[in-house]
Length: 166
Image (cartoon, rainbow, N blue to C red; front, side, top):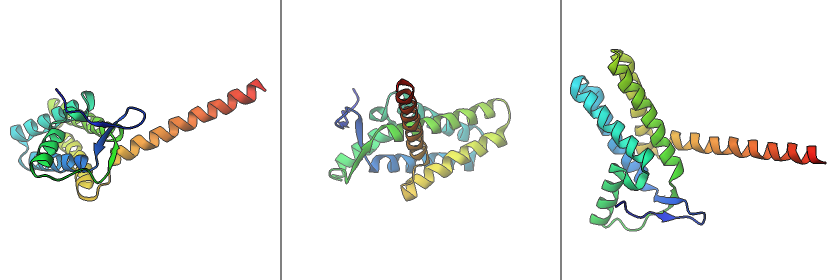
């Protein structure tokens, strides 16, 4: 059974802000190792990371392998309550972005375009390292931009409807 995550007033899951950075640090190590060793072991590491992204994307961050490790260490090391929480949706979308690029990398490996596959791996590695080091999550930012665009479309449609009805 997945651990219960806190929820906001609208019922959305909330997560400890330290969790995504922890997961990004592990992702950085996994993908950096894959990029250095390449060949079969490197490809297996990319496949492992693909699985971690898939679990987080489809089952949610409560089931994330790295999130579960973070929660275990948080309890074990008595790190205390989170300094802040954030909605699960933006980091979960970032996991989906990682999944998409990892899928492309594995597909490129499968068709023999290994150099292009390793470039795709390097992109995910770079973005994971950025999050781990600075706390800047490009996937999360893309999610928020998308939400603003969708909200703007809804308002534009509402204005058009109200003008048309007048």
